[in-house]
Image (cartoon, rainbow, N blue to C red; front, side):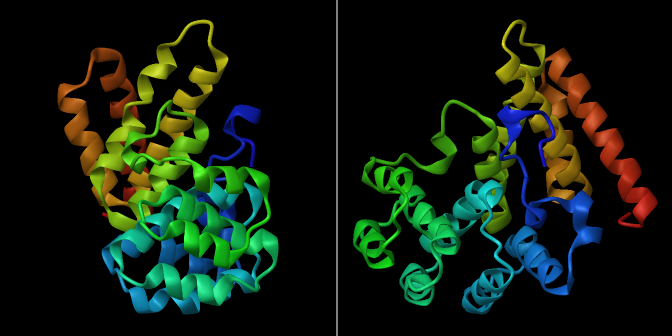
Length: 241
């Protein structure tokens, strides 16, 4: 779904990260969506392999989904000892398009044995091969902030519930004031949209926005207040509050 043109091609392009499109999901896709988006509320490593199998069944790892999904699994790999090995054993014989997000998850991670696991996984896409060779900084240090970076922050938040990822998305809102740089302007718009969508879904995100609004610069405060108002109205209308 190209919300803001080519620059934001990756921003929640997949159904599994788009709450607005939840009504279009079939039963299995809805189960996967809910599991991933709210994983941090009830983290169960034992649920990962069964859900990975279901994700393969519905071809979940579409082009637009690779960044949030890879970030999601990268966090899980780091937080659950031995999980990366289990997932690699499960997916190494999957089709290339389905296993590549797990290869990229390894590349994003800080696992000491990630190259060995990547070789076992045998992903053939060149850009992922190059990614595994780079020295990776933690996800919170990703710069510059792009549409793909926003996806990465949300995927990591869904896995961990760490509000620092939400704060990173908020840090892109000043881009809305950018003059003469369409790419930054569109990333700022994507940040606002994604904050609104997720503040509706997650009370935790809503509360982070409220706290950030208290100390934000006037232009950013106005955007955050709009996000908060729209999310609260939607939550009230849907019965979430």
